Image 1 (cartoon, rainbow, N blue to C red):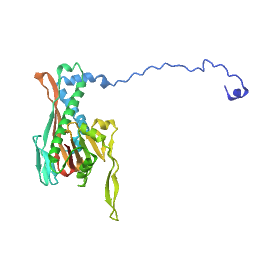
Image 2: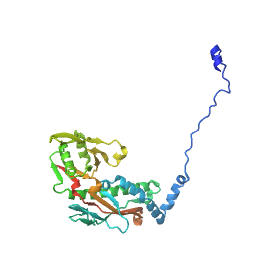
Image 3: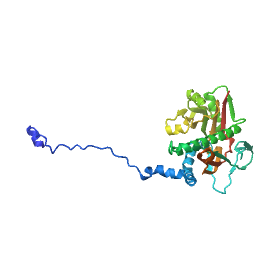
Image 4: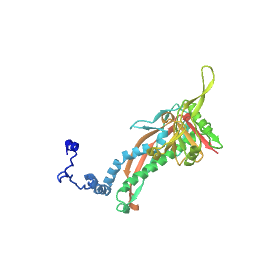
Length: 328
């Protein structure tokens, strides 16, 4: 119907059959499955059935697990990660006193050199899969094996880190307090920042994190001298404790920020102990020589698996970047 018919008040003509829209039934689209997804089970079954195939699977898992370790490990945030090429010695400069993990991976050595040749040690993990479970749970066991290896290596790296931090914190770098208060935290931060360094990481136990959350922590302020030699408070860090809301950061243990430093949750930290470290580039180094995965089966136990081996070192070359709080 045109506009002239509307102006004359004529009734609209009846709708014709041709004008009715044609109803087309929509069918659910089938999800396209790639050729690799269709043949994935058969391909993995072929690889898992031979030792050469399992070794090829091990080679393909090196890079994903390395990326996961860089993301999850707290020791790789506290210490600066330094990949070592072949034939290069881990030689670093030290400030006043240096502490490092010995070659056996169990002892901490403290020296006072200007330069240090850092020894390396090995961390191994060998998760295995029973043969009778290959058919039961299919090939999700490969992903589970990688998860176990990443968690095991991360836990060992963090335990070595705490062993080293305890040795470095002995003496004037430890603050003893009867209870955890805001002033105690401020003084621990000042131990690092008075040396011209920036506090970057806070390591806490879940129970101590609960105490920090209950404190009413305000912005940091210090009296700075003016031209007239009068002390006036001026805020130089404007944020107190700020909990994180990012799920990805929470999964890697970052629970928030405290005066600009990341608050990292680590269950292996002893209760009533809090570690504060400076930026990784000025505090310590973690050279990594190699990371390899080889097929390591247990035929007598009817189990197959892989041996994840990591060759690394761990050193704190600047003890001025560490502060520890012990609540008695």
